[in-house]
Image (cartoon, rainbow, N blue to C red; front, side, top):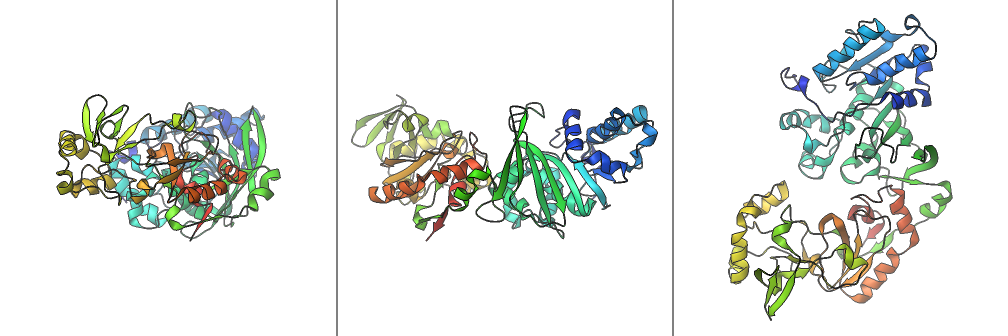
Length: 499
């Protein structure tokens, strides 16, 4: 790939600069300075303005070494952004009297010719593939395939569009710029290790040729290391040409102290890491998966694709046997209006507080235009909001819009109309508290997840299995409590054998 000097070299992708304090923490924790003094070469693949390498030199000066004693020319770096690259060169020239023009390259790391180094010390950019500039996405898409970060090309259009570019940079750097047996110390989003979905491909822990292994993780937890960055992040030690051996040491910063845990993937080698104290290890490892029929698969709530104001209502009154008055203004057929779960339904009784319009058959398919025409109130309402619904974005919803069913939602199927559901709050909770809801209640996108059931007996039987305390312990071991990934269907599915 040829770099466009007028665009790529001035691009800013996921800029998160490393504070000197935490750069020094990494240097001390892993003995990087001592190895550098003994001749090790050190490379920062996405160095920004050179903070990590500058910290290494300043660390040596604070230890009493003069600049001539420090092997500064054993430091190497690369930065795609020309302005940042120039600032790094100027700093080394002004402060350390050293010309680093032969050591600091100004390229896209994915285009840089491979050179093996003893140590990689870096902070790769944090940004999902989907949020990258369009031209750059096209440019690097083949790299995601090259470094085995997608199962197939379609994945980047679907779930893998949420994969972080940090995963690509880390795999490419370990493969192309780290000597066999070499060590990489990287500040990175911990979603690569802790989240389901797109990042499972990263956790194959192999690149185009060499395996690599996480060795130790420092989880910064709630510490504001990177100036109000909301992403969960940490410092991770990887080693090249080493197959993963679990559990690994996993340290969490709590009240200014590092508390030692251990981490291992529980359900498959590429599963998200579970973090636990040694005292919980036996109980978690002895857990037997729950056997369920395939029809009882956990599901995420319905998704309006940004059209909540069209489909959701806060007030509902019955006008006659076939008609509801919604929000004191809109008349719709009661056959297509369902109670929508809210947080209050899990704590303050099960009277509906919200409602949702689902222009669907009970078989879980969107009504056709011919079918909506049989319901004049529904047909007129959909026509009134057609512009809003047709303008929704996203590959999957566009498929429905292009088929002429622009009133479709995502996450709707026959399971939505099951007479019983076991529902739990999947967003922002710290407890796993599934409950049975009778009737055709609807779960709301990432806020709730559910298991559809055909009978009350079936629902009670499954609920009893989910209430095993070890289920909650395993969920908590993923360190996702309080986030949108806390108890999503993907997390629960890993605890189930489907028959």
